[in-house]
Image 1 (tube, one colour):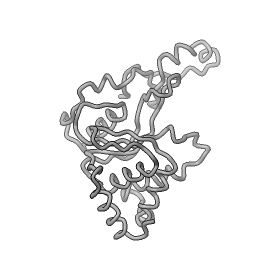
Image 2 (cartoon, helix red, strand yellow):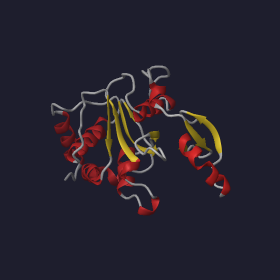
Image 3 (cartoon, helix red, strand yellow):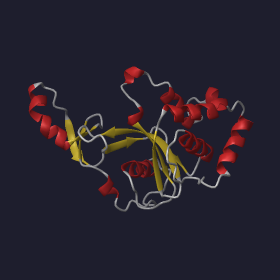
Image 4 (cartoon, one colour):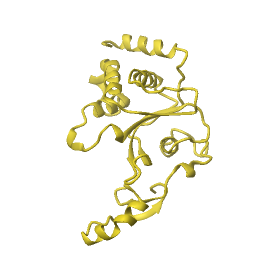
Amino acid sequence: MIFTKEEFKAKVEEIQAQSWYRNPMGFGIARVDRGQINKDKILQATFPVINWEENNGSAAIFLDALKQAGENVDTTASELVCNVSDTFLTACIESFRPYIPEAKGNEHRNVQVVSQLASLPLESGLGADDFKVVFIFEDAAPLTTEGVYLKLYALSTGKAKLRSLNLNGAFGKLHNCAWTTGSTPIELDWLRENEIALKLANKYPEIIMVDKFPR
């Protein structure tokens, strides 16, 4: 366990010195919206916090925690998308322990994310399948929906310069969806299959557009 900031820094240096380790360009934990029919289809990835060319200490802790959780941490590819698990969150919390009391407002926002996830109430209806840890190691054409969204967040927040990132083939990684007023994506096939029942029950969602991502 880590109890002091000095121990945290030593832990980070130990991880970064390992042969498998590679600093990412960008990374973050996202809540994902899955297809209503095809649960393997990621419709949207929402990042409460993104890191771009910064916070390599947090990246090292995340990657090491993923290895502890049994995830296949391949840092040789341009992207890495992994599952969030209790083991991952516990490992992160144990490493971030010295910073937890300070993690408020704009301070230590990655610590805030894992702390919130570790204490997520059951009544939220959210579980491990609703979150992903996403890394981009090099600016190649996106490989995943989550990778596309991480780059779009980096551009829209100004952390990356406009038109500076490789988005070749990005549209092909996104899915055409119906978007509600709350920016919730819905699979078009699900709407077609359930249109009659939804309209008879007066539960058909208010659709503001059909597109690959919200405006």
